[in-house]
Length: 590
Image (cartoon, rainbow, N blue to C red; front, side, top):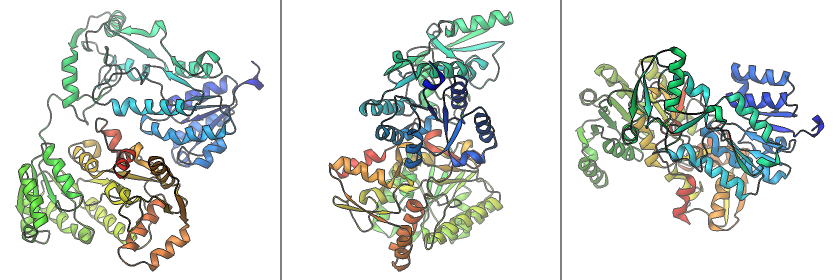
């Protein structure tokens, strides 16, 4: 095949390890190669270096992202083949790409982001929803749209597992003893990433791989764990002590295991691929948690999650709260779950200090009127001197990364001021950015004043394209409690941004239309009019509109990358948590 006949290729994810190799091999194979590049990539020196190298080698760099339909369409229309190599947490972001490919009509092969075990043939305990069902979901969508495809099942990357001989936590192969998962007889497949890239590029113009799964299973790379150990023993001239972990024991470990003590653990047997497993000899004692504001909207979910997770749970309650019939009934429920009720008040320093001295962690879920008064909690924590983590009342936007107007601007600024005070006092913290409560926004599809999703017309702030995040309250509670004893979330922002719950207003409306089998009239409100409406509206509508402006017009939920220096993402950390998706949540209103 001459160079002029070679397929033009678009690589998405080319700044990643595998994506970069795919782009390199595509160029070496004389394919006209295009690379989709997010604006944020240029803020990372490592990514910039990779992009400059690809550009120098002849790649065409195109600005765009998986969230931007316009840039995706422009990029896709320039090529014949699309290859996606993105992180697992972004797998579902390929849904818009699939729609764009379908509408463009020019793509003769789509290779979605897989590059691991075959998700349709994998059995993994406990975490299958997160590890594999997303990839299977993308497969079904590709097939339903009739797109020509090749799925690449490359099994295990050598560089992840061979340097340690599949020993979690090690950086070099063992020289004394080795842990073998299962009986050591079932074979696994280890493939070099450069070979993965080479096979993938070779396959994209090959009719034999059209609408097929391309399995990378070279005979010389297929070994059982026992055989792998024997090869290593022959190289070092020494026999290792083999410690076999039977399947039943491994499954038990997986059930009780929680991050942070985790590693990639290869299981030779019918359970293929990766597991999260605890490295420590025993689980640490669960922290004692004090809640302030625990009878409020989000607080009640988190208190219950804490008690059910086995944390010794304490609730600070004012005398006035006990006289409220609804609050009193809620407190009785908490007591039935084993929650310890302490009498005290945010404005009673002595009672605050006394309560705080009984616990390890303080979680504040006070309402917006009391946000600024959390300085009193900070003062009490500082005096008590025993708190290993403080969660201030946030549970919304990341207040350090917003472009809000009044009145939301003041509320966000108050939360930011509390952050700075915590940091100045040297108090260990976790800030929870849970974005939107599903219960506030989804029942009405963000239509102020409505009690059910619309069935005729829908008002959309802005152009409807920025992505927002909607989380079910019980999931927010679960993720928050999981973070309490996790050192990965210490002095970090915990973002709750699950892929299936990250959706634009337009896509949200489309999802609802599909459920009710009806197309709604979409009324778009440009930013200038949104700002005018905010100024003219009374409380609380002006608050609702100003938050909507921040999220739906400015895109403040998702217009930045979560960098390891300041944050972590909950659904990526806690892969075993099966969260409620927006799709599932809306079913109750059909």
